[in-house]
Image 1 (cartoon, helix red, strand yellow):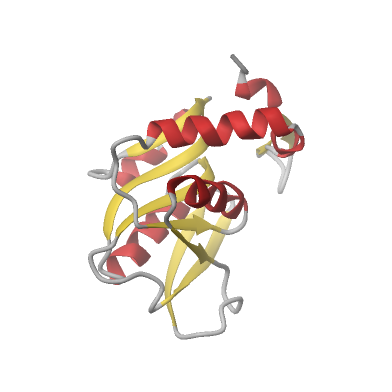
Image 2: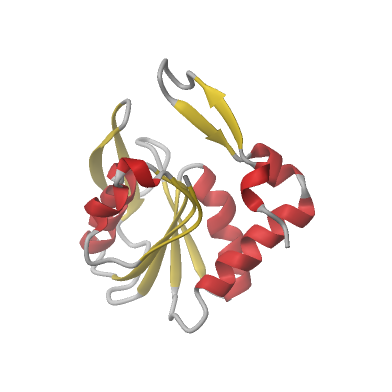
Length: 171
């Protein structure tokens, strides 16, 4: 069994002093390990209905699109401001080191679609909560939020109360 956490590299003081960035590049570089991560995420979702995956920019695109392929469902990118060409909904959120905005096309998901939100990492929960809010604006049914990594000590799950949260690696 591949130990996925062995392929996560710590980068101290990135993007600013005091933050330890969890770099997934070593995991992505190894095809066997990346495949194991995607297959494990797929197994976590067994028995769950997913029509569309909302992948959070940018590393959520990597896992979200691979999962959409495996689950035979749609994929919708949730992007930073100004990156989407059509009418959007916006959600502002706080990160552990500042504020940001995410956007999704207003017609990205049909009403009552079963959606799964995917990103690489759950920290304080602000980013995921913003996408939950966007999914609610789209009137989708949120089936859960899935992460490769969870920084449990930051209590990000608290912001996602009432929504199933799945993560493969916990620190």
